[in-house]
Image 1 (spheres, rainbow over the protein chains, first blue to last red):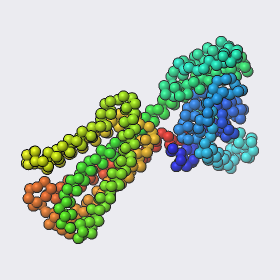
Image 2 (image 1 turned 135 degrees about the horizontal axis):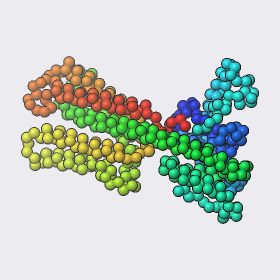
Image 3 (image 1 turned 90 degrees about the vertical axis):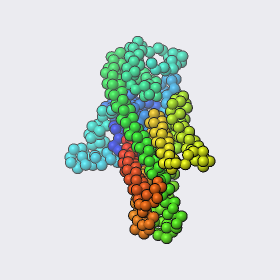
Length: 136
Length: 327
């Protein structure tokens, strides 16, 4: 696979949708709708990934080796339809870390230029919606 | 249309309200604007997500909540489908560029080999007379050419065989007999060459101009074989992995060709300086005896082939394969 020899930094910057999916999968494997709900939850409803955007990103992430398909099984909380689950690969986790570091550096610059509050949750939320929002 | 399992009803869950059913029906039609390959792979899952979103919206805000989803879903499908079409076109262009680079390097290599065989023939007398052993520059450059020919042949086999096998497997599976036939053209070409050599050995053919006939036949068959294989590869829809892999063998082949080309120049210049009697113009009328002209022809063909191969290999190498693209 191409990612075996690839540096995580080579894939940066990630699109907002891809970064959101990586964040949503950081806790464990999820299916498409679960990823969508998780993103919506942690952004307080500011970011909604549409189904086409979600699966276009998933397709690209599978090709880049950031995620893999875990298996197909029903979600007991939703219905008895079988759903495909996805989980992060080690490379995907490295890419997520690299992107987080890149964003942290940006945040530090913004703070130094008084464009963001101190590195509190409020400060982060002050800068990230521009980057994280509009996940296309 | 995309088929999904009608499992809700089977599981005893109440049927979806009419607004959800209508929304999903419209959404299914809307998905038809997405590229077919993408729809086949993810259409059913997208419909699952849309259904779950509609149910959640209905639960929260009733029919109004579902209707509010329409705008975001419409925008999502239109922008997503457009982006997917664009990336498909971009991917296809990149793949074509990689494939063209591989085919160009292969054709340049065959032209180089044809010239190299002419060179090998002209060195026979020089080798027999022990000139290579006497003069280290002449001998060294000749051994460099031999080493380069082995490296380049291995690189071409390493890059070309997976492509040829993938193209053959794909053509057989799709019953594309034209592509299969094109891939096998080198076999009868080789048989014709062998038959000609046998006829020459058994003195069946008239003795006049045998060498010119053989060279002409060899070049013609090499062109036909190379063109056939190149067309077959160009007509095959090879995977990004197979085409992406060929970049390294292409670069190695081009570098080996460059080394051999320089070594051939050094060989000729050294021979002219150290043993000019072997580089004379008065060879007695035999095709291979006018060594300076033969050597010049060989060097010119090798230089042109090498230049083409280097340009193609660099262009191919600088093209990112779709799988290594940033998402």
